[in-house]
Image (cartoon, rainbow, N blue to C red; front, side):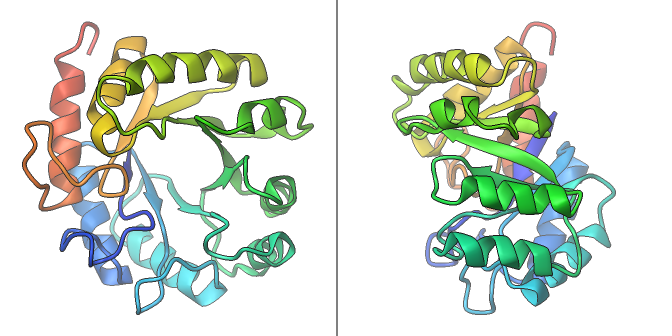
Amino acid sequence: MLQVCLNGPRTAADSAAVPVSPAALAEAAQQAVAAGARDVHVHPKTPCGEDSLAPRVVAAALEAVRAVVDVPVGVTTGAWCEPDPAVRAERVRSWTVLPDHASVNWHEPGAEAVAAALLERGIGIEAGIWSGTDAAESFARSPLAPRVLRVLAEVMDTDAGSAPPLARELLTAVAGAAPGRPVLLHGMDGGAWPVLRLAGELGLSTRIGIEDTLLLPDGRPATANAQLVSAAATLLSGLPGG
C-alpha cells in the first residue's frame, strides 16, 4: 500500500506545494490518488497554517478530502498540535467527523491516553515508532499494541546513506514490539527515497508526499504531491515483484 502524506507540519513558507486549506488538501488528495496513492494522511490546519486538532478544523479537512476520494483518510495527533496530553485526548473525543485512522507518536507523553480515546471512537491507530526514541520499548509494553491498525516505522535520519541501515534496525525493534502487526516504513527528507526503495524491496507498505520530502528522486523540487506519488509508483513497480 502506498500512502500519500499531503502536508505534515510544513507550511507555505517551506514550499508552495504544501496544501493548507481544505480545498487545497482535497485537490492534492484527488490528484495523488489518481497517481497511485491508496491511503491519505493529512494534517488539518488553521487558516494561518498551524496544525490543529480542533473539531471544526478536522471536520473541514476530512469532509473536503472525502468528497473527492474513496480511499481511507487519516489525520495526525502530534503533540505539537496540543502539548497537553489530556486536552489532546479530549480533542479526539470531541471530533464531529471521524477519520478512518489517526497516527499516534508513541514517544510522546500521553500517547496511551490519545490512543485509548481513538479506540473509544472506533478510529484506527497508526502507531508511530520513531527511530532514535524509546518508542519501540514503550509500545512493546502497551496493552493497546495488539489493537493498532498498523505500525508506522518512521526513520528520522535524513542522510541517504545511513537511513536504510537504520531502517533495518528499526524494523527489528518493531518486530519485537509488535509481532504480526502490519508495518508501514518511511523516511524523511534525504532518507525518504532510499527508505521507500527498501520498503518496496521488503514488500512493506510505505508512503511519500510533501510531509516526507520536497524533492523528487532526481533532486528536483516537487511541484505537487501527485508528482511524488507518481515517482514512487514508478520506482516501486520497477523493483523485483513490483
